[in-house]
Length: 248
Image (cartoon, rainbow, N blue to C red; front, top):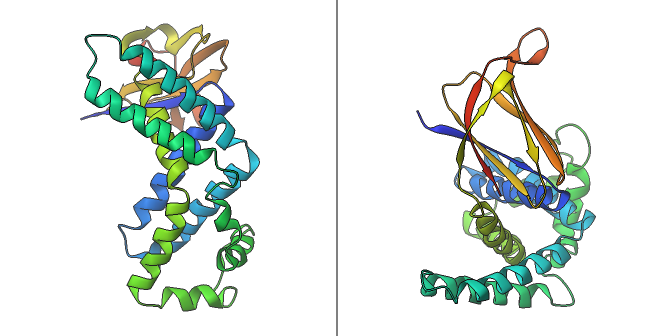
């Protein structure tokens, strides 16, 4: 059996990045299914992406991280062991994405001005499932020829492509900051300094009947292992746990 990968952010910026990454995966996974049955998941993901972009200065954070990445890539390019072709491609992509994000008006602002999306966004934020009579425009849209539906979806996602591609690039290099090391956690507990870290990545055997629970921040973190419990929902274990940890 393969290992199960768990990730935990150590600051709010990376937390937002991981959340957006998962939402993009969710939105795109719906396109591989029968859209008439998966459209609710798609629009929930799309509106959650827009809400996250509205609440936090994601664009500013992403620009700063891309600029740092560009600086690091230039430094790494001087090393004889580096694959310069791959590095140059990443450097050009980073510069192009930074330039696009610096535009006065973010591309995804057009989605906020889309009247069709706006009418649904308000309804999707309400508790409970919507019914066909709540959104007759959506029922009509879902019954249009698939090619027209796909054109709208492509247009919406293309407005978010710059931020999506930026996150893919940034998170790729963050995850490559550290290799996995074997850790033995006595009494199912492990702690360490979080100084200089942004992301913890933990690999556990898929056959293990427990999972990690992480608490902490950029200064210090701790990992406890828990298993599901019918009475309490979940409970800590006291066993010695061996797992792999990458401190990124």
